[in-house]
Image (cartoon, rainbow, N blue to C red; front, side, top):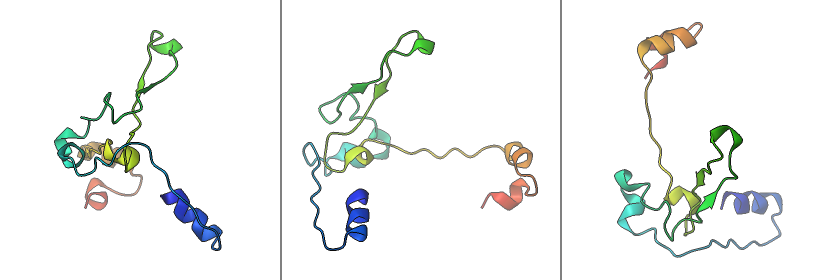
Length: 103
């Protein structure tokens, strides 16, 4: 959708269609519950892509989850916020202390 929006801004006299693969499962609980964000991995909602065998990881393949549903990857991705300890901020921030950086 972001790409279509940018194209429409750049080419205002053109029209665009956006096609997404898969069903509309956005109303299902698993796509909205924070604790179940990974429930779509390895299912029919996922394209189940894998990386090429990695030479530095014992020739294992890594799962590359890409959503196959309306809404795309934002329906199966999650975000976690982890705040560093005070010392981390004090060490990294040259002129700012932890108190000045953390809201």
